[in-house]
Amino acid sequence: MNTDFVDQLYDFKKKAYKEHQLKALFFEVTSRCNARCEHCGSSCGDFMPKDEITGDEIKGVLDDVAEHYDANKIMLFITGGEPLVRKDLFELMEYATSLGFHWGMTTNGMLIDEKVVKKMEKAKMSTVSVSIDGVKELHEAFRKVPGSFEKILKGIKLMQQCPTITDLQVTTCCNKKNIDQLEDIYKIVKDLGVKDWRLIEVDPIGRAKGNNDLLLDADGYKKMFKFIIEKRRENPDMKFKYGCGHFLGNDLNIELLGNCYFCFTGYWVASVLSNGDVFGCPDIERRPELIQGNIRERKFSDIWEHEFKLYRKINRTSNSKCKKCPDWKSCLGDAFHTWDWDEKRPNFCVREIFKEDYDARDKKVKDYEELKKKLEEEKNLQIK
Image 1 (cartoon, one colour):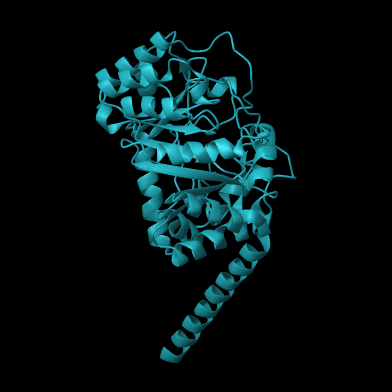
Image 2: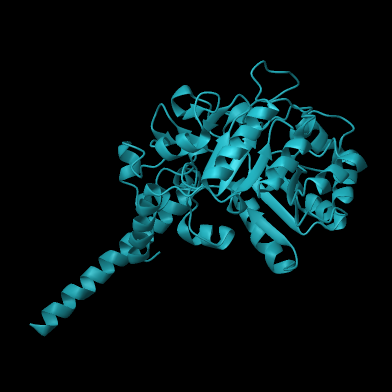
């Protein structure tokens, strides 16, 4: 990658960190869930927390954001837990729509029926992401809900008839257990007629942290990336997405994401958690020092404008290994959600995962630079 380009990208990021135009607001409307997934980043489950945010409190945040910003330019991403266990969800989303917000939802798909889809249409839901993590047996084992797979497929078919949904996406969490089933999952997604498929890796967060039975190794990552690239060529009518992801090297990030890597949390992205805490990306480790405030104590707009300093500084790490890395200006410590806040280093490092490949690449670059220097010296001697 051209060094001038990398420097320009770094300068852009420095400028971007100083600005904070809210574009995506995640609402974790509940931490309750009807599944107990092996990889859940927030370790949700079937319990009713005492401090769950109320409907009036959610409306208060929506009013505040709509008053201070252009609601039409902010996408609400409704998450959980499982959002559909919340009885007043669609009433709240109808209210959000009336203020000018667009909204979408991430769901495990198990509670979708005809009545739910009618409510989606009335509340003008525009996007939805449903999880399929393997063929029937593996998906149900991964999500810990026997008998759920057919319900999910039926729910997807019902939502395909909803006129307000402009983007129906299937998301697959790639891990060691399903990485060799991608072709089988592709057939399921294709047979459903879904045109948008997003593949992401299971990250070392929540229940998956330290679980080597799930976390991909170098071969697993290579299989996933190769699969995405090859399927894009094979079936250009279908979107094969990778995200939100990590720094993988500028060339691969451009090929997979269409742009260079940038973690937008605190810059474009914020979240309101199910207890009212204002946070960065909801996948980030829930540590007290990372909570920026609470909507029960301060307005969201005040927190967004005056906090998030931790997220908005470009020099996140004092780790000497990171600072000496040739990719530092492009990576900047990778994603916040896999950052080790105690060690001040990334838990995900592409150079550690693909060490042999990077060592070979660095040797080629070094050999090239030495050859170039030698040729310049010889040229100068000839001139003299």
